[in-house]
Length: 561
Image 1 (spheres, one colour):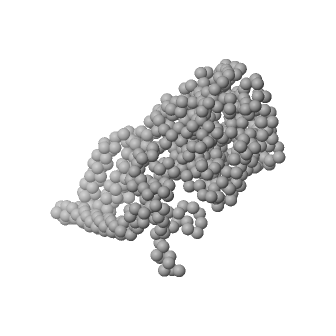
Image 2 (image 1 turned 180 degrees about the horizontal axis):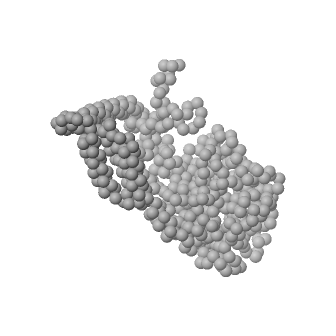
Image 3 (image 1 turned 90 degrees about the horizontal axis):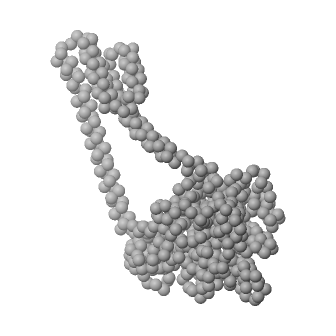
């Protein structure tokens, strides 16, 4: 069987990229597919993103709000099966759990009762319930029990070096997770952990690793898990390819790191436990040695192959569209994995999710409602435009007929407004416009016959002079607005030309830099700076980014100092 892990950087964009969820899953050609960073909330679970023929799915979604964001993480495990019921396939799990602490509501299924989530997971009794709930509320883990092994699909937290709060969260996340692994291994369970750990273990796993790179506490923790450090886990890829360099799974989206394969290996598969053979006492027998046939990075999923886009064309990413995730999948193939006893899909399967079932049953009605809504919006726009035209005409009428009886005017306006709200007017705006115009003309004639004595020439002159004055005023206003618009456009062009002439050139290539703005909180937040426009790469490569940097307001700052 084959297991794949893939940080999709948003499940919906990947589905759109491949045309359907089924096509995305089939492209990975695996029996168990673990995806991270789905960026879906529970409210967004719909059939088109969770259901595909031939697959059972198990989701974990964000339940908390971090810095005002929802749906910023999330994981899902898809299991390719012939049948979801009375199946003896290993790919179909015997049990499934959202999170790894045991305190999430409905963590075992969509139809479990509220008091069924009270117990902490075994081995986690020492931890406070609120702490466990906080760890599991970001949708970072799905556990599936496949009989021969327990599979953890995880999305490790990211923590910047100066973000003390997230560093503490990441430490707690892995500390509690390791306790859960240890509790399972005490029961002699085999464990496979896959996903985006957000940890590059060693210098060989990072493009720009410095001399102190491996002293990081998270890298030290990861290496402590491994067999070579006295732990119980195998880093499956590195154990299969111990000397391979530039084997990366993630690249920066902002610097064009994929062009020169300038990235890091943070997506992993680790495994621990005994083999399935009866002769388990024989030296060298373990799950990795006996059952792992191959493990590699699926580089064909990279958005950009080395050399496909020349570095000089990168220009800070402008006009370069790379479709796909900023990660590459990793797969592991297993052999000699026998079938297990017959069983049904666990209750955590999204086939039991009420939102998914409801969406599947009312898909046609949803489309019908959407079409009706669009028609209503169109009709509302027609009514709004008609209402505005009537108001304009009524205003003109008041100007032309200052002595019109106020009672008669109110009656006419009330009649117009009532007809405006009729269903017929929603679809016959042109007819209504004609009626309003004829009604306005009638009122004007009536006013003329009942006005004070005066010659017909004076009346005609009066009725003609006002529109002429209004027209002149309108023309003058339009002319003024046009002049202002042209002046603004010329001024903006002048500013752009000035900005272009003030953009510095990098020293490495003599090319214009690109400007960026500091988005990180701190004393330099909001400041603009310039950097080399080429894609990031090794410093030894003259075609790569030369590392040029300059503050946009550096001269001003020096003067103020």
